Image: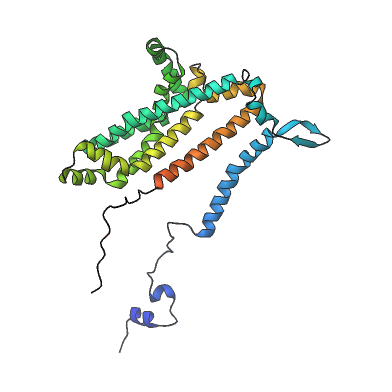
Length: 307
């Protein structure tokens, strides 16, 4: 009586584990790395980020030149930043910060008022234009900023004639620069929530388009919108080329000016910008991951009684 090779091999207690139960083939790897690998990756990334920050802090705390190979440290430079006596020397820096905050606000408004409704409208009504919209939003990242500035110069001669040469007008140019960064988080969130299915289900239950937009779609897009807003603010605060070529005073251009006279203050304000970005990132992360709490007195979850 002959026994098949597969049966004999499977029933053999000495057979390898892969032959006894698991499929034969190359070893499969999990999509998520293990705890040790995650720790190594986070450690390397943390060192890469912390080393320059620690160097900036050490530089900003230096007082005078080293004496006998020893460097004195103190908070004199931090105190000097807020000293009223130095307000005139650092006035250009504070004015640049105010201008950058105004540009951030207008650029975020452009993203929320123009880009977000356009993406939702295309997703709901004209899905065939999705590729065209993505191409228009992604193409600014393929063009160097210096090339864009050369094209913006004649355009801004017209803008200055209409609105005047004010720093806030840079938001029109920066709004184009941030399109690729603002588009991607919202687009990913739109794909994840199946916005067409949600809108059709809401409409079938009698909701109007205003209710569908404000009570169904936008709450589900909260994480994508917040990520887009954070990236927009980070890009605006770090933009230098357009402001420099158009002769506008922003945070980055003011840092370059102050650095020639007081490099310590420039490093201190760069640290403040990093801390602000970190706090904003944590705040947006908490706000985006928070789930609404059930209202008191609302509907309760029904449980089946044991029979």
